[in-house]
Length: 264
Length: 222
Length: 49
Image 1 (cartoon, helix red, strand yellow):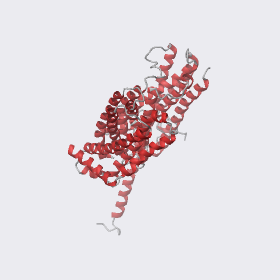
Image 2 (spheres, chains in turn orange, red, brown):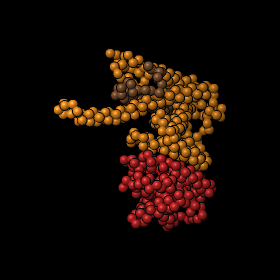
Image 3 (spheres, one colour):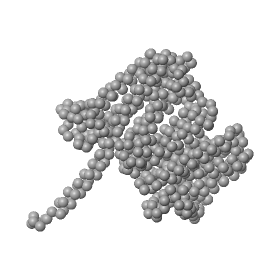
Image 4 (cartoon, chains in turn brown, red, blue):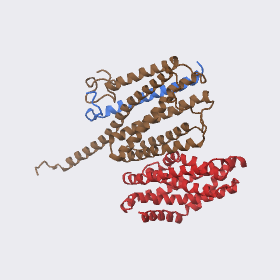
């Protein structure tokens, strides 16, 4: 029997069991993402020009900005999923919320890390307390780590509700966080949005947009897998429950059978 | 509804008053933190004066953790959360009642802290109106966010350690806003403290409304 | 290339995290999928029947 791989059809896998959360579609999606990353590296390092002031440090933009954008997309999905769970008790949306939160925390951490690494050669500092986006993103990161922390403490509906409330609190408070930090100090080292002010050279802009697209595709790939992982965990949990109930019933049946074989 | 709020607030405060924990333990703790900061910052008057607002509100954050934990523990420890539901009191009323009780305890501590910073850090209060308003408004926001998160962690195993992880990032805007408002009230920095008070009021309003809604869900389902 | 060290750390961290997380996800998926019978694996799409 051949070794099961993601993307294999069912005939080659062990009887009665699917090999993984992968499928033909996710295999090809993953391949496209992998190729996209390679292309991004080539574009980012060799095709895009260096900046007048920052020189080559500007190449950090191609990993930093896509990560930031995906952070907001992911946490937006978590917020939406949280609302849908609280409103409709939709398991599907709850799984989306959890999956997006996990992936979002990774993107958020990367945003902070790449931003910090980028800041050192350009602003001469790893961190700036007076910057809106840095501090807001840090607070968001901390809140969502708390979300994952609560989620890890159980896997029942009560846990889903708790996490959904945290998601709601985060979503509702974020504009306030943003506003408060914006007012906190007027000065900011953080440049205005590169995409909207139109100051980017063509190739830089193209590479940046390309990077965002690759990141979005990766997000889709990871969401599908993570969603299915969550689904399987739920199935396992309810499966355990069903098995336990079936076992109890079987016991009850044995106990109630007449001992001496006489018909009742 | 209002009488229920009063009922719950009075119950919590009465329990608090009888156990005397706020007066005998929490207030001394708050004073101790101020003293410790004095030691840590080498009793340098200039540094202490600049840092007064921040130190004040960080201390309030620590005390808030304690107050919220104890507020939640009143029902959780004896399994009385179900009793609250069965008593037919609206969850929003329970929330508001507990919020008021926590806020009152925090305000008591803040009064002591103001005296503390005047004495220990040589704080000069330029605007009493701003100072007192900030204390009131910020405290309502802290008590609101704290009460709903307290209910959230009530059914969780490691709730003492989880609560700070959840509550402190949410309270970050309060820390920022209250500190800035205090800077203005103490005359140490030229900022518009009243504008910050507006932000604190916004935070308070949003979190009290959100808390009132979420409290019911949490009480019934977790 | 100027600032190459920073670039390598930044890009390396990003791509490395992505790869590690992806591997972790797929392995976790395989472990779980082996424990749940096929009939219960009703994905959101039926693209692999």
